[in-house]
Length: 146
Length: 146
DNA sequence: ACGATATAATTGAAAGTGCAACTATTGCAG
DNA sequence: CTGCAATAGTTGCACTTTCAATTATATCGT
Image (cartoon, rainbow over all chains, first blue to last red; front, side, top):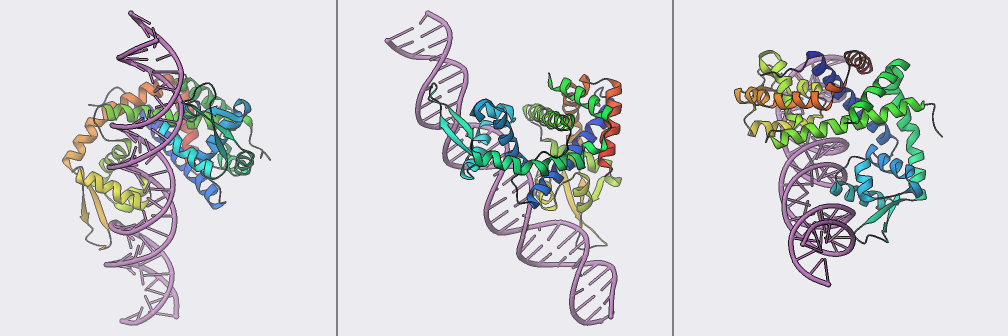
C-alpha cells in the first residue's frame, strides 16, 4: 500500500507544508493589520517592476506568478480599480494586452515591502544559519529546474 | 526603504514560495486526474487516522491542520456528505462535537496515498540528497518552533 | 488564400475561503 | 448561586478562486 517513499521524505514534506502555511498566514495578517493588500498583489507589482518598462503581456505575467489566466484577469481587475496597474492594448497582437505598472503601483509595492521583508525575516530566515540558507536555496532551485 | 533583509534571504523566500506552489499544483493535478479529492481532504483523513480512536474534537482538528474554524465546518460538511467522516456529539461538553473517521474514510486515504506519495517523491524529494533532506527538516522544524 | 487549429484574454457559474456575527454551553469571580 | 466572560461550533455575507465555455485574433499546412 505504501509506495517506497522514505519516512524522512514524507516527514520533510509535512514540515515544508506547515512552514509555508504558517509563515504566509502570519505575513498576511501583518499586512492586513497595516491596511495593506495581500501577498498576491505584491507578487504582481514586484513582477511588473522587474520587467522591462514595467510591462508584461498578461500570459507572461500569469506564468511568472504561477496563476491561472482567469484568475489573473480578475486579479488585475482589482489592481486596476485600485489604480496600481493599467491595461494597454498590444499593437502587434490585437488579441493581447499588456499590464503596466503605474506610479501608484510602484509606491504601493514600496509601502508593502518593509512589512513583507520584516515578516520573511521574523517568521523564516532569522531562524536559519547561513549554511542552511545556502543549502535550501540550492536544493529548492534544483527541485524547480524540473 | 529596504529593511535589512539580506538578498540571499529574500531570494530563498522566493524559491520557497515557488517550490510550494508548483509542487502542490502538480500533486493536485495528479489527484484530480485520478478522480481523487484534493490535498485538504487528505490532510483531514490523515490527521484523524493518527488520532486515538480515529476521532478528534473539531477545534483540535482545526488547529492541527491549520484551518480556521468556519473553514473547517464546511470542509467537514463536504467530507461528511461524501461519507468519509461523521460527526458525533460530545458527551461531556454539549457545545462540542467529534469528527470521526469512517471505514470509507480510511479506504479513501489509502487510495489517495500512492498518488500523493508518488507526487512528493517525483516533484520534490527525489531531487534532494540525504544531507539536504536532513538540513531542511531541521531548519524548518526550528522555524516552526516559534 | 483557405480552413482548421492554436493562442490571448474574458466571462458565467460553482466551489472554496475568511471575517464577523450568532447560538449554545461552560466556567469563573464575587 | 448569579452574572459575565470565554469557548465550541455554525451561519451569513462578501470576496476569491477554479473550470468550462466564449470571443477574438493569429498561425499553420496545404
